[in-house]
Image (cartoon, rainbow, N blue to C red; front, top):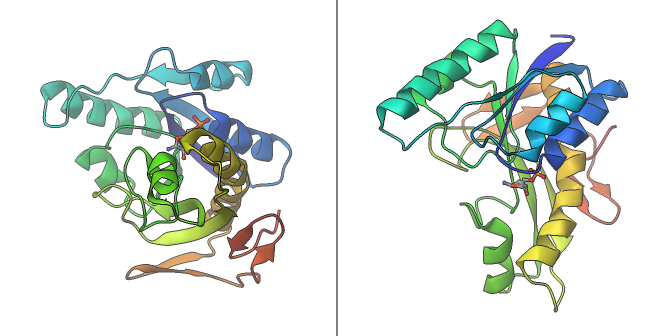
Length: 222
Ligand code: GRF
């Protein structure tokens, strides 16, 4: 693969979307965001997309198992096909994705989670880590499997949890690392350097870990 098209799913403010768009526009990764989809009409991420002239859609999903959910699942695949998407990036998308999308983009859906999986899966990863009292937490980019937050791990970044941290302060520290590792994972995918072997992901020519203000393993190249 050389240059790939991305479909990004969002629910919130879209800072991860922004970091991906910036990396694309600066030529740091060989990708273009061709469509953005949100389950929330007021998601600021949709605004961000429009500022960059990227088609942006609100697709309400309803509850899992409902007719609305099945319709959204079909609509997702339709939109992704319409915009020639090669890789789906879940970037702060707070809903489960449907079986049609999972089948249509098998092994081509990435997710970012704000904790060091398999620790603290679910929707409050940062708060759960701070409350638990761990000393190190971080973020994970992984291939999405049907069960939430379980798929093979591509890259993780670790940050310290400081004594006065709450969920919000820890989330901010983690978010800064999310913005680095997600574009990197996408670039490896674009370069066809990721190979899933069972639970493991082999990264061809993986660089040694980057140790800066965080431990990022495999290390950053961009
Ligand atoms: C990120 O921490 C992401 O990992 C989490 O939700 C947050 C979304 O942030 N699941 P943003 O919308 O990308 O700013």
